[in-house]
Length: 190
Image (cartoon, rainbow, N blue to C red; front, side, top):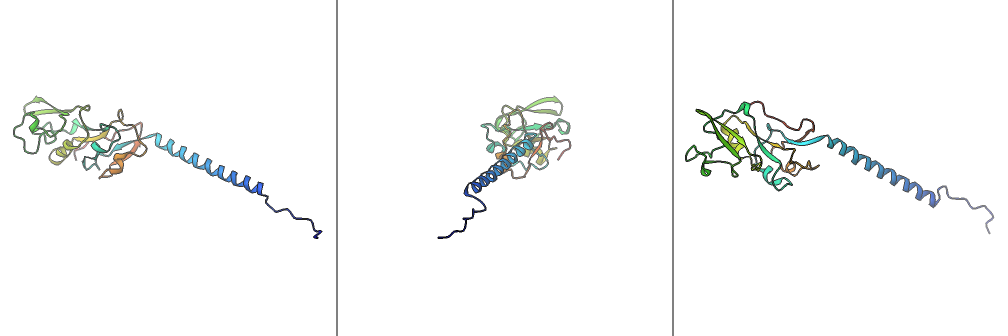
């Protein structure tokens, strides 16, 4: 029989389990703090469309999580030409320059045309009707001053962490901006 005293292992099973539990707890705490830090960074920002990058692809109308998109057409009146033949309002080759539906570009009649004085007309957007399809924006940018552009309206946007429109944006125009300055307005034509 061996008379030597049995040596204790340097780390007991209990110590090993405690150390493992501590390491797992610290890793979990680190991951939790990382998630909190990420959310606090995103909390001070909101999604917005850079009008200089927007390619007017139409994805804003169909990829928002809301039933009716939070993206709406916005009008920069300071750069509008108040044209009688507004290419954001009329079809490319209208039958006549009147407000008949067959002549209008907007599928929901969200653009209202009001006579100002000869030969000027003012165009306003009814945001309740606008679906963010960008047809008017395309027409205005192609032949006009580019005063019509798209913006995320923050009274409607739910500020998704991963905006579905941003994921499919063809022009990579979606970006986060400071929540206290949520709009990227157009001040110069094109």
